[in-house]
Each structure stands twice: as structure tokens, then as C-alpha cells.
Length: 156
Ligand SMILES: *[C@@H]1O[C@H](CO)[C@@H](O)[C@H](O)[C@H]1NC(C)=O
Ligand SMILES: *[C@@H]1O[C@H](CO)[C@@H](O)[C@H](O)[C@H]1NC(C)=O
Ligand SMILES: *[C@@H]1O[C@H](CO)[C@@H](O)[C@H](O)[C@H]1NC(C)=O
Ligand SMILES: *[C@@H]1O[C@H](CO)[C@@H](O)[C@H](O)[C@H]1NC(C)=O
Image 1 (cartoon, rainbow, N blue to C red):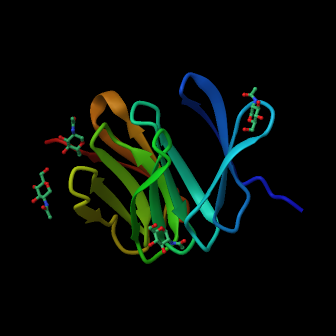
Image 2: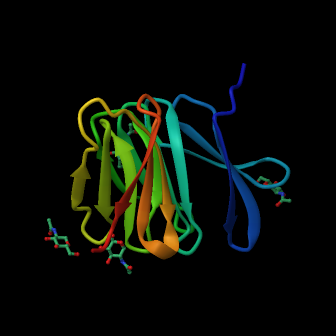
């Protein structure tokens, strides 16, 4: 049985493509009729995907904490690292930075040199969702167990 974990709509080389992950660390790229390319660089299930339509980069976060960044145009694994904990969410902040939730922390990663900054919300807060408020340079974090929304301001 196939469980469709994630479906994203991508645009690569002017074609409309889709990306799915069905578990086991495999990511399939689809055109409208069939699987166009399969990429795999993780032994455990891919839990989150993010796509940068300008760079044509695909960001995949897996259950065992591996983050892989793929350049789809060049078919190249650009960067891989281990967050040592389940990746809950990955979102691009802007052209040079991305944010993710891992180990119950918000992590901001520079794609210029892959330096990381980590932020926690306080004890007892389970970080579950993340979204970028683009024009305001803010990150919205949802905590399910505390039923709260928090806003991180990226510039002060
Ligand atoms: C989709 O990809 C398959 C495999 O590469 C190819 O044979 C087929 O022509 C493609 N279809 C479209 C609509 O691009
Ligand atoms: C992912 O790719 C890198 C570089 O090609 C390789 O060193 C690593 O072993 C791969 N990991 C897995 C889980 O396939
Ligand atoms: C990465 O670049 C930022 C500026 O973009 C700089 O502040 C930081 O020190 C750099 N980190 C490393 C490890 O080079
Ligand atoms: C992208 O966001 C990071 C993190 O907030 C910030 O440091 C950087 O200056 C931003 N880059 C651009 C081009 O806006």
C-alpha cells in the first residue's frame, strides 16, 4: 500500500511538475503522466518538503533529522546535514535563509554558509507548525499542546 505523504506543485524548466514522498526516504518527481525522476538520500521517511522556485532547489526533511537540499536543474545534492531530531517543518524565509522546526526548536539556517541559530519558546511548549509572514519578516509558530500562536520578529 502507498501512503501519499506530501504533494507539492513545482515548476522546473517551464514544465509543471509535482513531487511526492511515499515514505522510506524516497522522493518522486512527476510530470503530468509519470514519474520523471526519483531521488533518494535518506534512509528514513521524508516528512517535510519545501521548494524554492527561483533557485529550483528542493528541501527535504526526514524523520531521523537529515535535511537534504537538492538542485533540481543540476540534479545535484547541494547540502546534507543532521538536525538530530524529527524535522517538523521547513520554510524558506527569503533567498538566503530558511527556517525549520527540529528538536522542539526554531532553527534559522543561512544558505550562504550553513550557519544555524536556534530559538526555543520556553519549557512545556511543543512546536508544531511554522509559517513565514513574508512582507513583515516574521515567523509564526503554532504550539498544539499550549494552543498558542507566537510571532518571531526577524528584524528589530
Ligand atoms: C513524462 O516523463 C516520462 C518519463 O521521463 C516521459 O516519457 C513522458 O513523455 C513525459 N510526459 C510529459 C507530458 O512530459
Ligand atoms: C547522501 O549523499 C551523500 C553525498 O553523495 C552521501 O555521502 C551519503 O552517504 C548519502 N546518504 C544516504 C543516506 O544515502
Ligand atoms: C556566516 O555568515 C554570517 C553573515 O552572513 C556571519 O555572521 C557568520 O559569522 C558566518 N558564520 C560562519 C560559521 O562562518
Ligand atoms: C533573509 O533573512 C535573514 C534572517 O532573518 C536575514 O538575516 C537576511 O538579511 C535576509 N536576507 C535578505 C536578502 O533579505
